[in-house]
Image (cartoon, rainbow, N blue to C red; front, side, top):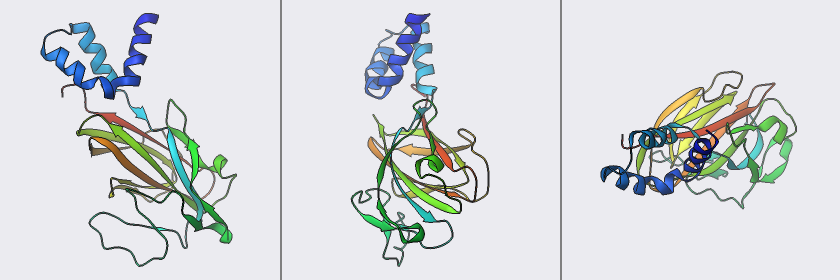
Length: 212
């Protein structure tokens, strides 16, 4: 069982790079039923987004950067974020006139959970942005899984794909979004607002099943 688990974990780590070769082997009839089942499992397991650039905190109700959405008229704001290619060297003014830029943050490797309240040392009635790049070995349909405490807005490759504006405690992968990933890098931007108490989110991608 340890050998099987180790092989499964190795496939999880390399599944994007290995997909085309695995498809070739399958089409050539070189994957037996057990091997194909293991591959199917690997491609159905969510892949956490771990490496983020985080920007904040901003007042939840008040001035914050506008997002340049694809297909939407550019906002009349002196402070904007391009969700496909944000300027990670830019400086912004946020909560209580504090000045800051984008900072590296690393989410939990298993769940993708990122505790923003701990990252920013507290604060209520605030918001923050987080940006990441999600790699895909091919153009494909996928599920984007998101959990948040409290509100969350999500942009993928410049288009807004989700918005939740209520209050809630974090629950892993509470929102499931049908998206399409392009081959190569995909730009993922989220804004997470906090009304009080916990302040966090997670993001994971679950690719379409192998040969689906």
